[in-house]
Amino acid sequence: MHQFEVQSIADMFTLGGQTIAFTNSALYMVAALVALWAFMLMGMKRELVPGRGQMLVESFVGFIDKLLAQNIGHAGRKYVPYVFTLFMFILLGNLIGLMPLGLFKLHPFTFTSHFTVTGVLAIMSFSIVLIVGFAKHGLRFFSLFAPKGTPIPVLLLVAPIEFVSFMVRPFSLALRLFVAMTAGHILLKVLASFVVNAANTGAGIGLAVGIPSFALMVGVSALEVLVAGVQAYVFALLTSLYINDAEHLHDHH
Amino acid sequence: MEADAIKLLGAGLAAIGAGLAALGVGNVFAAFLEGALRNPSAAAGQQGNMFIGFAAAELLGLLAFVVAVLLIFVA
Image (cartoon, rainbow over all chains, first blue to last red; front, side, top):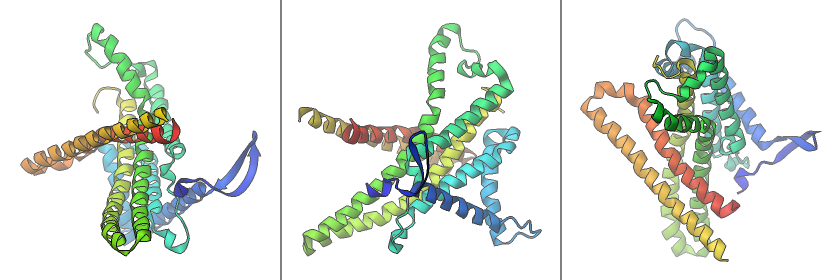
């Protein structure tokens, strides 16, 4: 489908036979970055009495701070910049992709609907888990695969399962975001094509099919705004849970 | 032609997984609401756990969708 196609805006150089280009995907990532920058500038004035902008920014930062404090505890503080950036980048990417910019001949591209993008984000989270885990616990990090107090015969069964469930984390993390966004956009596209195709067959069918489809589209669009927020939250939440595993192994903070 | 038909049937069968995931997600929120209405003061602290359950249940539905898409467009 056209809205998922990555197109080159400006070819830059070739590297190993591959053309490195500035694509529409990269353009909307820059747009999300600029939006995030503008958002943060609203609240970076360090006013003693916080104004509207600062309250807004502080509530977002505080939300992530609370999330990390709940899931990781005291050690979670140092991950606030990373998880906050991740959360806001995904949230803004999802929301910019939903914007009705098509009215101005600007067809927005949802970069979170591509597995390559969400995959890199998931790999970043997963490598932080690995680096922190091995740096902090050394080889004891492998005890993550052996829950405390498990008898040896059960351990033979549990350890491989724990290992697979650990290794599958980056895939499930990336897949969840990518599929949720892709499925939502395809659903909207299908409903929109119902309206257009029904209108092409005639006034009667056009009204009978078009109006319910359009009403459903409005509802699904609202649902998509919710999904955009929930998926960004879930990505941040799961990242914090995985970092908690790396920080504390199996003991609870 | 036979193989194509079976691929599409498989994609349709994958929709069962999506439906079952819908049941699972509904269950997560229903159980949360039921608990939250019984003890509203404890509800706020459990919101994170609810979303973990939601994410786990939802993932299976999304995987079913991926299987369907792979069968139709890739395989």
